[in-house]
Length: 441
Image (cartoon, rainbow, N blue to C red; front, side, top):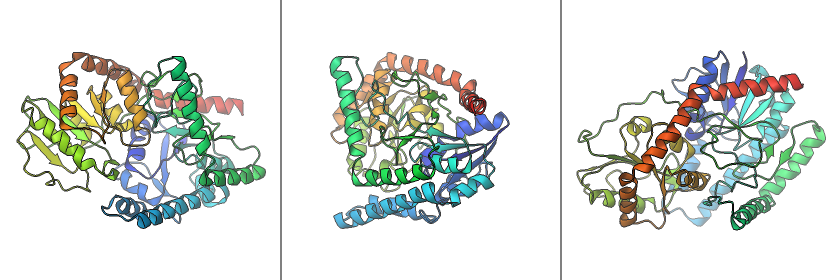
């Protein structure tokens, strides 16, 4: 059995996404440890796995939450925004320097007696710190794969591949644009640092900047994706290992209290996830959803608006609408007929695992690509959050709830997901890859 260290980003979505895989590994006798900047510890409360803080100087406890709150504050001046972004870049630079040339992360990996490091693919540079410590490292994607594939568009693209000449050309151009952006000053400085690192450590895993949505390059180590290939577009290269959804359906959540209590009316769950309150103008979107449901008294709406909006910001609510700042999502999905979501992969996977079709309004990051896959596989519909109206939302709700094919396709994908997790595909795949590496050494 192995001592396996998870190193996720210190954010709810990235840490919570690992719990299903952690449970699989623990059930097979592996010992688990989590490492992250100090703010990550809060998301591990009531979990049985030890936590080791890292990057304390780069990101002191509480500072990330302060920066996020400042960016989301209404009326933020352009200069203030620039100052915050400058600080964020500076702190990323400190983390990069520590991963490449520092000794603290390397020492803590040794002290942890790690047999394997699972590095969040969004910030993969600790792969190189692990190399210095003599610890094998894999890149763990809490989203779909981030490295370039000529058959699959970048995740920040809305494009659904068709196989046509125009589609293939569009995908190639989209990736070329992503690559050209890596020559901007921040990434160019990253290249300089990597060249200096490889002069000191020529045997370290090689890097490729043919990637996106990563702070740094993609490394030539096993890339693990916490999803099933059936949900993804078909890739041309076999350089990605799918672990299955790895959704922790047994996580403890408080009970769902609806006022008035749930009846037989279809329940619509609406939430824009942990980053939803970063989008300016989202209040208008929430109002459109409320108005659409108000005109359909046969439906019920449970809406989570985050902590940047007051729950009473929408005036008197119709009797079939409940607005809260947060909902226990799994508990709510078990009662829901449909979810209106931002399209974060965690929420998409939870919807699929519980057989709930989706109406996806992507905000940022990988969400457009996730929405494209939802549409491609017939699991739901998508819209543009900046251009929506109550009429559009209402028409989409009517189409989704009135077309049984959406439910049928979601149920079919649900069975695929359930089979993967029931077989502990994630843990088995990691064990096999680790064994292959040991035999090749």
